Amino acid sequence: MIAESGGQKLSKKIALIGAGVMGGAILRGLVNNKNLTIENPIQVIDRNPGKLADLKDHELLRITNDVHNLTDCDIAILAVKPYHVHQVIQDIPNGKVGCFASVAAGIPLKILAEWGNVPVARIIPNTPCLINKGISAIAYTDNTPSRIRQTIELVFGSVGEVYVLPETTFDTVTALSGCGPAYVYLMIEALIDAGCAQGLTRDIARQFVASTFVGAAQMVKDSKEHPGQLKDKVTSPGGVTIQALHILEKAGVRGVLWDAVNRAIERSKEMESEYSGGRG
Ligand SMILES: NC(=O)c1ccc[n+]([C@@H]2O[C@H](COP(=O)([O-])OP(=O)(O)OC[C@H]3O[C@@H](n4cnc5c(N)ncnc54)[C@H](OP(=O)(O)O)[C@@H]3O)[C@@H](O)[C@H]2O)c1
Image (cartoon, rainbow, N blue to C red):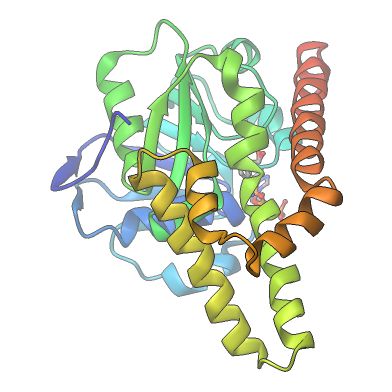
């Protein structure tokens, strides 16, 4: 992990274009981060600014609905859907943006650099950025200045962990951590239903399941033990857990998760080749 935001200043001029699920998570994580001093108001552009009703009078934000209103900024974070990125870049007059930082899935640095004609960064964040528990991978074009890199790492570091990784890893990172929250929610939902089926209230089942995921994940992060060893510690010989694990193994849960990740990687590559082929 290369960036933590504790007690730091964000002094560059930042714009965020697209404040939906991901942009909204980054924005709310940023403005709610008490360890970060934001020196210049952040320009936020979303064609549905109603989504930001809770933030409309925030002193650190200048919210508008049209990308043509963008004024000069050092970094414009692009958080629109991938198929809107090209148009958004085209709508911004030359010279207004020092660097584009795109979170769009499947659009390679090379294409972003061609469209933007400025240094670019590509980031794979995930939605837990909303609660400062995100994890983001970042890659840059070679011409991205170090002060701009530091600022991008500060922005994403202020909403979670940040790793600078080769772009060649991005399809895998997308499939693991970008998509990952959806896999986890699906498992959580299924376990809550199983608890409800036995008569627990939905609320109690939700608390027990969610805390189990948080606690188990934290143990994996903090412990040097292999996840298999941690699993064995829950699994007494002749006990309860081993019977449940037998059902999971028989159903091929490991293989299913592996296949799901492989399919997501394939789809990410397909999207990249669509954009590299000139679509968008
Ligand atoms: N969601 C995730 O977990 C996740 C994870 C990693 C990366 N990403 C990436 O994050 C990006 C955004 O995804 P999302 O799920 O946050 O999408 P989203 O919820 O649809 O948010 C995008 C927002 O941008 C607005 N917008 C589109 N074109 C615009 C324009 N020309 N000017 C101003 N606003 C514009 C959209 O308005 P309309 O609704 O009117 O189009 C929408 O409010 C995607 O590229 C995705 O690949 C998402």
